[in-house]
Image (cartoon, rainbow, N blue to C red; front, top):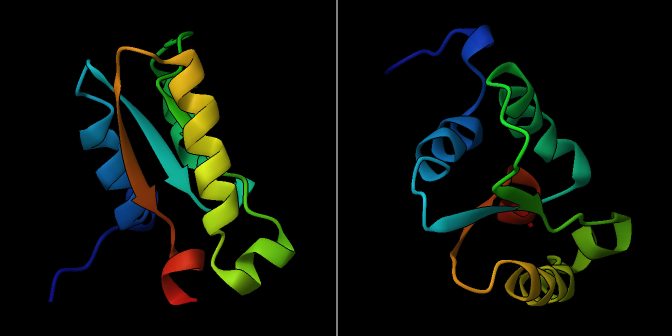
Length: 98
């Protein structure tokens, strides 16, 4: 069993760090707005002013039903602004548990 240090974050943050390195992709976190805190913090630390990440911004009602509507809307908006990029969707713990 591997144990991560608290300062390293969770598996979602680790997956984000790997996915964001792919230059022809935009990374979407499917989860509540708080799940985007870690990636935002990494972007600030690296002085990266151009974000290549987004979040589906699930709300309480969305959590109950799995957030598929939020995800579909977020993908549509992301395709509009990032026309030539592939979208990588990383699921946070909230919709994964539901």
